[in-house]
Image (cartoon, rainbow, N blue to C red; front, side, top):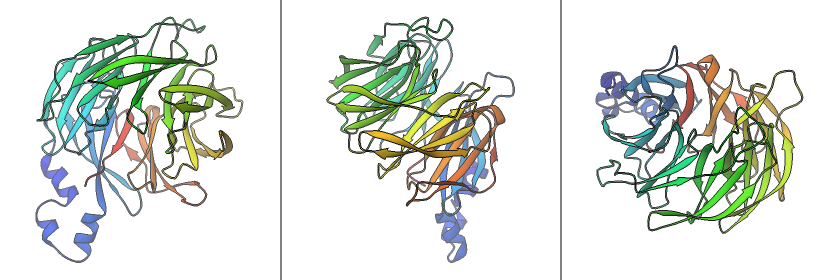
Length: 370
């Protein structure tokens, strides 16, 4: 549960470096923190949550340490004020962990009551944490304490449903939970049930308001909202498609369906989907094709722009930095995190810097604060 604080503080410019002027101070100001979710129980796995930096001038990533003792932190988020980190512990006896972002010390853990939590989110007020527990197909709600710690679970929601894939859809598999831009409703994407469930969230409680069914065998994995709050995009893992959807008041209406990769002998599994801050482009990571697909937003639908080789194998997670200038990809099967410059005018991705080698990266979290 520790980290090499000397290396971390040195990389962040804490101490004497911040007192200097000229080039040194400018260099320090251009460096921001980033954390890496990973698997620790796999062969060759990480020791915990990776700690690093990236250069805001060129996107170059560097590792500076590790927060040890956090088991299988496959997804990591930060609190609304940036003071704390929260990570799932993706194990059969699922847990969620709270970490002080300043000291990088674990505050506490709580059991989710579900198996293999793989995603988590905060409500708009930042007072409640919700996990998506994959293997049990359930959602778990937790209140957050003032010290950033996690209170005991207050609600567990069990999904129902299955799909035609006997290996992946024998039952529900909650894979993603996210609030709409207004923060009024939470949408839970379930790969096993071929469905996206919409929930209201008041008084710290989830209440089902809608169920949007996707094509049988689609295997919906993740969803991303357009900034206007009226559109959303669902990445389907099992049939390698993306669905453009209309959205209003907790209800998702699936529409246009597009392939995410060209036909190939290698089966493709879409993973993450993200939308540019200006709402003009949508990006999706292709595992198998090992690319990032770029789509242009075209009214209620999408138009494929092209594919950018990701520079690694099996890109599990992609994300923008807070400025939107850089996109990072966690390439699970090649132990690499790659960086791309984002062209604001065209949305084009251009590789930048040297890929960062780190153990089984499956999530990248560039934080809002330095």
